[in-house]
Length: 120
Image 1 (tube, one colour):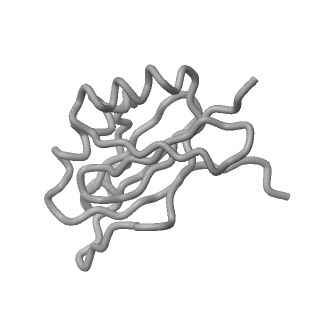
Image 2 (image 1 turned 30 degrees about the vertical axis):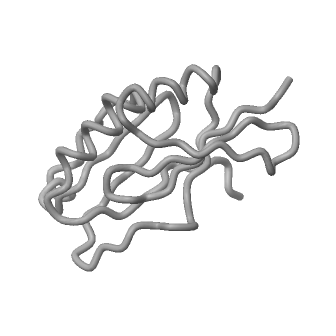
C-alpha cells in the first residue's frame, strides 16, 4: 500500500547546481538537504520544505520538463507569487482548475513547476 510521496525528482544539466540553489533556496524558500556521499558524487541537489522534497539530478542529455511537473501546494499564493517575481522569476497565472488559485513558473534550467492553493 502506498502511503505518501517520498520525493519528486527533476532533471538538471551538469554544472547547474549553483543556479538551482539560488532558485530553490532563495526564491522558493526551501532548505538544501545533504545528499549521501555516494549520491553526492553524481552531482545535483536536494531541497526540502516541510515534508515536501524535491531532488534535482544531473542528466547528461538534459531536456527540461515542459509539461510534466510537480504541483506544490502553498499558502498565501498571491504573496508567494510576489516573492518569486521579486527574485526575477516570471509566473503565469492559470484559472482552469476549479476552486483553486494557481500559477506556473520555471526553474532556472527550464523545469515547469505548478503552485496552487485551494480557495476556501
